[in-house]
Image 1 (cartoon, rainbow, N blue to C red):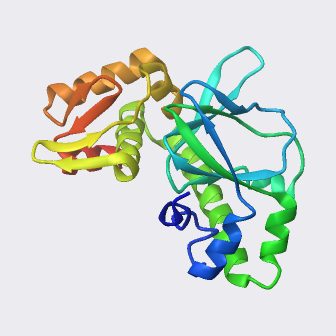
Image 2 (image 1 turned 60 degrees about the horizontal axis):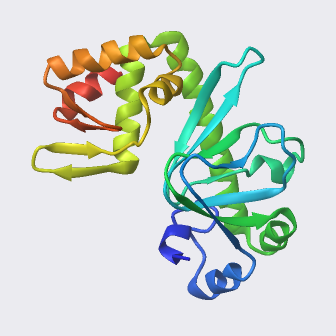
Length: 225
């Protein structure tokens, strides 16, 4: 288990080496293959998870079977924290986009860590605040932004977290299918494909299987506004 990856999570970012070593004794690890489900929407659970390797998607399914992709998460990002304070059913299904490994911390162990560690409590509050801010941004984008703008913004977010800069541009290996990318921006696959094709024809990006190469970050950023 890589301490540097764990420290990317807001909850553990300020822990010193001694505290981190003690924490590791309370963490359990889980490894899953691409396509496997960690837990389903509606399942009971009281664990917080940190992604150590790979990528996962958080999604919900409507009563008529339609799927909505809430987020893509990678190393250092955490989820499941809501169940620690609101022990109801899981609010999303977590599925591995790639082979992935997770560290988990139970409700009881987390409460023990919060006692006497205000910096850890502040980290958790920061995570919850960031989640709320993200939810507000998503709602605003659905109301005020068109589909190409949402696609551009989603690609820039993926580039920030998973991108690799090379001589020909920023390579973004998002590992998503076209349908998953459409679910992420809340639009049909056809509309999203049209937006991507338009960006490609303008020379802003190059499409590759389950990835893109962003060639013009400035124009993509302007389109995302």
